[in-house]
Length: 394
Image (tube, rainbow, N blue to C red; front, side, top):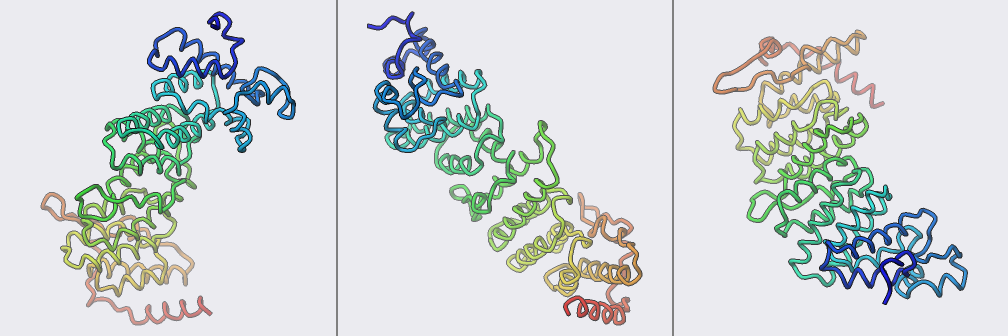
């Protein structure tokens, strides 16, 4: 029997065997010393194997000193940083938590630890019972939440999220996972975002979840969101809105929340958003004028192309006041192009400046100055606009 006082001389196999034997004794001094010795060997940057020897991989001494499982892992292409993944995947979730905390305290690479946790989850799920899977997921999420978010794969986080959809993990664990995903939403894809709605919900995709992701992305206090990142999320959200717009069961309040979730700086152009709103209004033709007006308030005409602005001005699905405002703005835009000025701010700061609020209609100057359609004399400007567009397409 080996002495605990000589643990520094124990082989990798001895440490693993002891840990597996003592899995129910997490508070044991033996477990703590075994883990400390184990992590000490992992934390040596230059160490390429579980062996104490400094011999190279080609050395006969290396192959003789390593145990069979670690050797097989190396033979199957495990790198010098990940050779231990398979060996440690046999440990219980409680012991894995102790292991990860010890590694983090030693400043071990978060990227490598994160990769191990994802590997651990996959490995455990092959044979685990439902209760064991639940505990594995909770442990993996709790540990990942302590890492630098930039060290975690967004794709892997979404894979974990899909695993928890039909499992009753704690609300705290779910919130942590959503926060981690939201913090790097600019790395997500449209396929990642298209998560089915909860059981018995009438709408197709889980819009509430995406809104929570966006809140987590915008509200992180420990990092400044760069313009490039927020524009990437803006593009992603516009694709998502276009995907959910045809859903006949999507309520206008949820659609509006998606449309208004990001600041104006997230979009350089509103053409894609306009087309998505157009689709939504076509599918939801029964919306009230008030509901339509609230949705259309998201459109900043200054960020619509001339073609999109003309289309909106002739679009019967939009409230007539929005159509008139769009037409007026396009006229001003054309005049500014011809005159070399930029005097459209009156109409673009808030393209729809009146909404019923608490039963009272509110209008600002832009709305008050909007004339009725029958008072417009637009034939000359329309002809100029037509020629301008023809010249641009030649």
